Amino acid sequence: MGVDVDNANAMGRPTPKAPSAFDVLGPLGAAFRHPRLLVLIPAVLLIVAVALTLMRGPTYIAMSSFQPQGIEQSVLGGYASLAAQFGVRLPVGATGKSVDFYAFLLKAPALLQRLALHEFEFVDDGETVRGNLLDLLEIQGDERAERLRNVVDLLDVLVQVRPDYRASVVVLETSGRTPAMAVALNRQLLTLIAEFDQSMRQSTAGAERRFIQDRLQEAREELRSAESAMENFLEVNRTYEQSPQLRFEASRLQRRIDLAQQLHNSLAQALAQVQIEEVRNTPVTTAIDAPEGLVKTDSRLFRASVFAVFVGLMLATLAALAVEHRPWSRFLRKDAKAH
Image 1 (cartoon, rainbow, N blue to C red):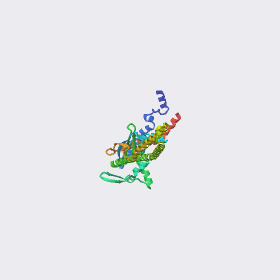
Image 2 (spheres, helix red, strand yellow):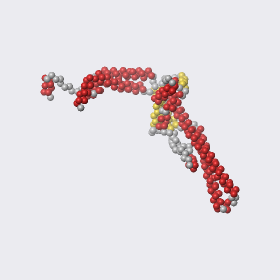
Image 3 (cartoon, one colour):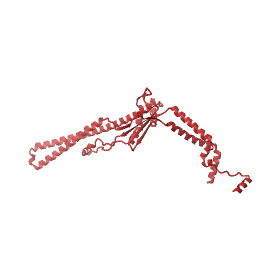
């Protein structure tokens, strides 16, 4: 090997140089060969990110959690078998809603729009704040419809929902410029959920009430018909006890009356039950944590700093490659020929 090197030197050719660690690293090595770029660009982006985050001010997050009530049986469950005698199958089954349902509902545009248009009133740093989110968040837009779309898009970011499947709990987080605003957003969303549940339950109960009323009217007519048939039978057959055939017919008519009476009474009880259900206003969800007192500062400054440093390193690498464009392109061509 020594002879080859001496011969190469004697012929005036440069001695081959062993590749350095930076050469092996490729694009990353190019960045390390320019330490100023590697330090300067991430530092500038970090300063800009911190400055913009501080200019926007801190963001506060209010957190609450609730649990949907367990799976319940429909209010028609107690008399579905009776209604089946009319040849009608009632919607009996589980009516409890899963945490996925509430996670979807809390992010639904219709619900977020109702939240945006709600007239808030809360005390913030000793001052009473009033207005809807279009004004409080200073939403821009040429028309009201555009402002509504913009505020819904913003609320989709400010409202975060995390379903906990193991505990069957929904965790709701809302962000605001102040702790009071974050709490107000969270509390109003919980109120909208309660109103939605109550409206759905009362609507379902109203449909069931109308169904039962129709069936109760039919049962009442059937009972009257059975009683009329028995009355006519007794008027014609005053001494039916002496005839086995007439006793059998009387027994059959009495069974018809008993069955119609039983069905009528059951439907009457069911009607009273569903009428109570229609006006009931008890909550369907169980609150576990209230947003008041559960407010924390958003750690977006840390996230913005990490993101800025990461982007800065990527840009520094690209800048180093641009500086070494010609030698790097020759290296790529040689490498391509070698393969």
